[in-house]
Length: 415
Image 1 (tube, rainbow, N blue to C red):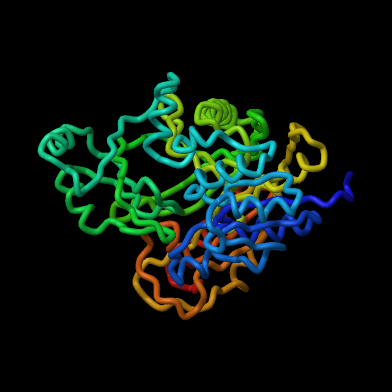
Image 2: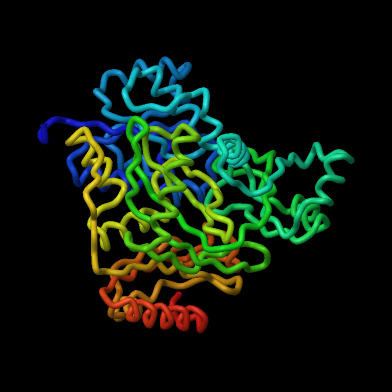
């Protein structure tokens, strides 16, 4: 069975796409990329579009409809078809059905897995606690809607319904700030116009992300991370991400809640990268991202370095054994990803890798913005200059090296 040719198909693999393709190739698994999104900007293509990394590539635009594309794909014996972006959930669900594959999700419930408003409404109806929210379409803000907004509990967070990577996510303190926000909000993301937004009461507590892999409604928690952000000019800016040990109560609480969420929104098959807050009143959903973790694969690299297992490994294990990997992956290592940010508008230079590699806990780094790029001040995940992965048995060493990196960053000595 280990020598059997296997195919993994991914619809719009624009999140950690290169990492997934390379990891599957290392495991001797063939990959098929199916691109349906159009209108990516040159910057988005540079950061997200890697068709050359896949064994076979298909473009929906080359076919008359989805069924014609499915007919072409049937020449391959596809083992599983996955979401590569939250933007493509509905198409992927229908393509799974057209192909008659074993591990698809119900197209009728697709909105619960990609619409940031509908997924919260869905779990609320199922009895899970949620944050207060309102769906907003700026061009349709009539008098009654504005009256309701003025009574909304601020501070609140607003974000586009169909964007990702923290694009457009902003902390709003008043109705007046909200109206000003609509004048500067993003209007397009990965080639798709942004018309609708969701306003949610600000969640207070600590933010976590749970990475999972699911088959036939059974979920495997692969890893849990805690996010650490700063609010800069109203926008949440990532500073670092820590991997959470399995014996921590936060790991158990976050995992248990996310498994309920995944079942409720019908994410029965595939990867998920689900963000939540643990508040004094219990867990609250931020959003379900129905695909592999982002960050150019760095979260999965950290999981692999510390636990010896990640989301791709979970997929590979299932393909070979036809069951989820519920072995306990325990480690005495600690791990952190530092996100290097730029604090004044300028043309950046090359990353000072010699400095970073001299640190005792250094493990890996990923440059996201090449030398010669003009970058404004940090305002979204997409403005991150580089990611540095730290791994060490001594947690204090990681903190010491983190402090050094942040000092270099502030003094503009890294790029």
